[in-house]
Length: 453
Image (tube, rainbow, N blue to C red; front, top):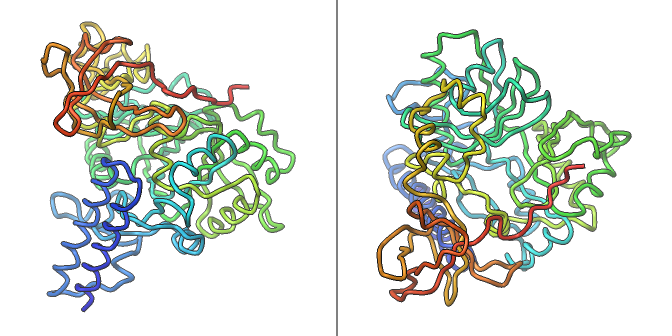
């Protein structure tokens, strides 16, 4: 009976996602997660899995070799997990769907994606991003270890500053994108994608096992909360909770440990001025016991509205930000992904990071393809749609596409052949077996409003 109920539940969440305004590339992820859940539930006839095991974030699996991982935390199983805010979401009308191995809110109540999107652009939205994987890398070898795995220039970064970077394989392909925050030369806070958790942890373990440099300690911050407060009034909202701390000292890319006043008590959180929407905002890492209280306190402000996966996707695409597994994957280099800026000048000179040979060659000679933005006439170009020259030559494919709530136009990101990437280039995109006009456009589509002081 447990297996039967689990299959039915998986089918129900897929139907919920299909009825929503979720873009097709996210719908595919939802369906894939639900399929994994269905397969797991079906196999439970021969060995029933308790509901607590099915949803617990403490459930673990072995690595790809079938051996228990010796790194601080093994990857989650294929069963769906919950962040510490699951009950909070349900209480507030969250429509929960599988995403990145977790049950996450798509939208809330009767507030649709477009309304939620506009609220973040004009006021403040609160996102649960606790499914993301938070890490600590410490020790005398931490800096060099992270510089071995990524092309980031960490030596010159000031303390409590952050950078977007990419995990690279030996061939220069992107295994994941990540945020690296430097607290000190021997202490780093790193955030990676939930959908890449198992592969990333296996990769970190493999690289740590082979590491011959100074000692490195790796800790996965399981159960810690992570909230993103985004929008033009985010600083006003958070400012009511930080006491004497001056949020103006936290310009974009900076962070600090800040005590928040929550229900008369001080809760020390890691607060970074960052986000995935293009708006001013903060990402707040919260001790497990205080996550719900912090979320409830932020939501009690009249400026704040809960926002889910649907709004998060349209906001990030307008801001020109990549979604791993769609706009980036292990075949795409940072140069192809229009992320040449993440390869520091000193790292180019040293050429001592994984995949450096391909990356540096593409910097010198140009990559075979490039990530671009597109404006589409006459239809919505979804992931996988083919792109052609006006003469009919196949030159690329769409990686993400939506109707832009802010612009009132259809926008997309794509990988196209080098030479077809310049702003204003005219292309054709295949939508429902018809060719529609497309034009390479400047990215971001909507101007970013990061606070730089």
